[in-house]
Each structure stands twice: as structure tokens, then as C-alpha cells.
Amino acid sequence: MAVATLPVASAQEIELDNRRLAVESALGSLRIEGMELEPEGREILERFANGEMSLPEMRSAIRAYTANIV
Image (cartoon, rainbow, N blue to C red; front, side):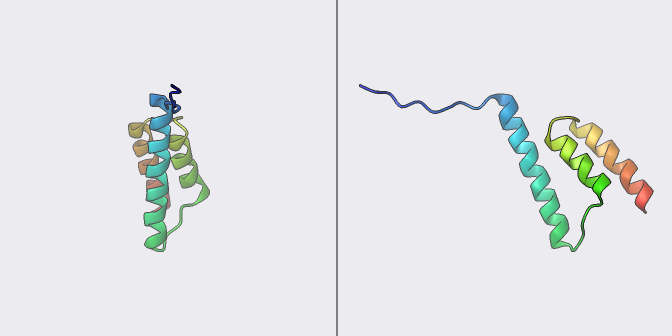
């Protein structure tokens, strides 16, 4: 009897997928409100989505970014 196997995603792949979905959702929410991020803000979110920074690091970077644009 043949057994079908499905690829198993690693925890890291799942985490990166979740990060990407969160970033896409955040960008969608901004668009709904009629706002767009400048390239610097997008870069922060992309770095988070790619696993280059943690959630606390991203929050800190966003706070610093928004402090400079207000």
C-alpha cells in the first residue's frame, strides 16, 4: 500500500509565513485608511517579515521612524 506524504514545514518557515501575513495585513489596513508608508517604513516591515529583526526591535524602529515624520 502506498502512503502519501506531505511536506512538513519547519517552525522557521511557519514563523516567516506568519510574519509576512502580519505585514501584509498591516499594509492593507494602512491602504484602507488611505495611507501609504514611505520607503523607510516599508523597509522596517520587510526586515521584520524576513526575520532580520524581532518584534520588539521592529516596534522600536517604528517608534523612531514615526517620531521623525511627525
